Image (cartoon, rainbow, N blue to C red; front, side):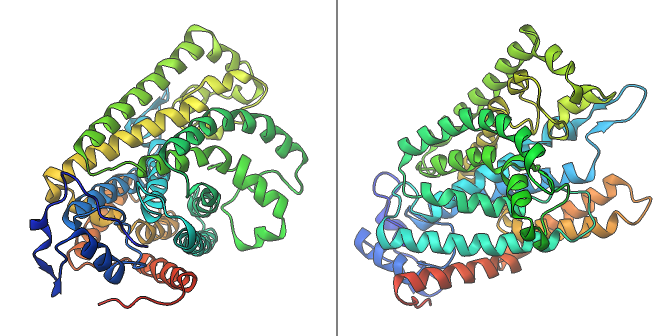
Length: 447
């Protein structure tokens, strides 16, 4: 990949006169292009498209910090119950804050990463785009394989990695699009995909054989039942790709912005707040004032004593059919347009805050950004840890969670301090570089 020089108020010749790791840095935009191609192109770094490098580093630190927050939120949803048991079950902080939002943040950030890998605000074209698509395909294959291996573990976690890999592949046709076209696609997909899923999901559950849903994490043997596998991945699984592609497209659109500019960060923050609040307000009106909630509670799927609390913390556990009113919900994992809009808004809020802090107090985010730079390794380690801890009775949830948080943040800080990559990140980066260089016609020497 060949980052482009960002000209304008962020660019200063003074920023390029120092040297890093013994390398003489360029002093003109033209020299900057040649320097980046020589030393960073194909390296697997996400820092693409903007100059100077110090500013780019702060931007990436903010994105990595947001990814670290997503990781900690998903871990919380895996460890703690989503509601407090008692005479009257009540949703707790984990259920109300982290459920649905953390995984959505993870997916939106994946789209942003793809945008930065493919040129940022100036999308790659031609041979560079072909190389990007090949590298992303290789990366997706490795992530999917790791996800399927984790699927063999006995763990009560809906592992996202195989769906994550499929989302990468589904994003390939959109990588060349510029901001306005991407925004139109994202808006259209967000509105229409839940409607299409609502129509197709009951058909898949009834007609796909041997079953329309796997009811377990994806493993390699599932390729022998391709219809059931595709049904689960795209429609009936916990992270249905048909709707979740909305997050990737929204992330791609955000990644086409100049995320270094404070005005863009503030607009992203304001837009996120507006999206999150308006989605909840619209759902309140449809489900409350228009009687939608009464309609869905009359369906067969809602005839269970814990429906009220499940509706608030994880609607993915309910078969949403027999009533179009389900599409008015903004509950976590509802998969409706309002759910997608709300969680995309909260993702934008978290990202904007992290970007603003990274530009002013970068040291404050170091533990989070260090962990966020190696989420593939840390998420996999978390799933493996939960697989054997679940078999040990009596471990308090608080001890289990906070001990993992301390380890994750400490590892992230150490790896960041020594500029190490996580083991799985190193594998994906090496594979991506190999495939990208193969398309470009040869490897590029790095110093």
